[in-house]
Length: 242
Image 1 (cartoon, rainbow, N blue to C red):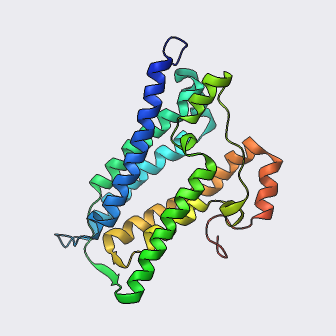
Image 2 (cartoon, rainbow, N blue to C red):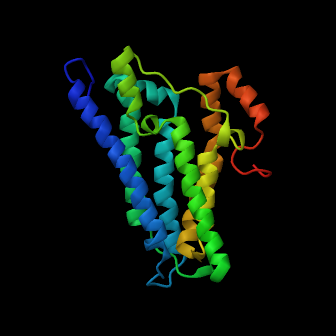
């Protein structure tokens, strides 16, 4: 769909529906991780479900990696118009994430199960992770993450613009606080089933691998400003470790 002056209403609906899909995918993930992934597996096979889960998440990760490449982004911008490029990315990523969570295979076994004060502490950490995610997303501009802001900006100024670099607050703690919050959420569960552990390990490993590539793109956008930020905030995702 090419966004032209004659199709602003259609493009706007497309962008906002993509934002709704983005929010829906996150809610579906929370339900899946907190409820579905906590149920005991109804089978005893271990290798097969882990292999299927790895393939599922790899497909999702490959989309993220491919769409982050400047060459593909420029092609999409030429086909769709630059403002809608982010919205198309959001649509595809959201639908893929829903598919991954819905098709995730149960892995039998339970690593641990906490109770009493330890369980309360685990839930508290997960709540903090959700709050950190909300706070970090707000600093970046939720509408930009959801693919709506570029379109709104282009309608107002005639050109899509990237959001300013954020380096204070949580971003002065680690360079990728959203990823730090993700790690807290998926690993702090008081009932760590093997299904949850598989998801936590695969998703966190992908984030750790993707960060250097993502930061190369940020250096291309922000130049010396981002390099100075890298020098000032040492840790990418895990304070004291990475």
